Length: 205
Image (cartoon, rainbow, N blue to C red; front, side, top):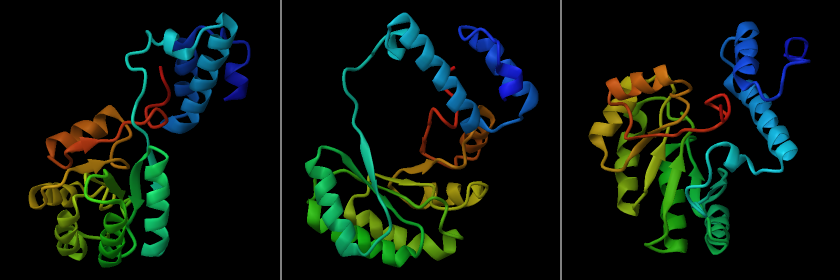
């Protein structure tokens, strides 16, 4: 990126993105790092927050989620209580073994109570619907607010099948890196929710 960007007007974000696209196909996270650095430089130069550059703030606060990595159910439940006490929502990392994940969820739910919002992220770790479906149906007893990317990013058929079989919302994350990906997910009814991230979108621009 460096040779094509040196000397480009920092305010000309259209040109910066056009130049990046001319030498590198895809790679939105790489481009996002440059894009966000440009906004940061512009904001500091103008002594304005980036939110102002983007049109102003709409909310004065937003809910935040903290992820808890795959550990023993007891360790995850202790961490979940700590996360909740700090004011965050809980996101459990799953995706190794669905029945072990069910036990993790059961123990965490017992520790944090019925009202706490819990979501889970399998990061595409379940290899097929057949392997995980029964355990996921059992998980619904523990009021899971969202299940993110249960099967692989290209398995839209499996994602759609889970959407039909389960009442809890299924979220597509790794399956969506572009507007075209989003359209494929929507057409295939492969998710109830799409996870949009600044990095995946190539930056604020």
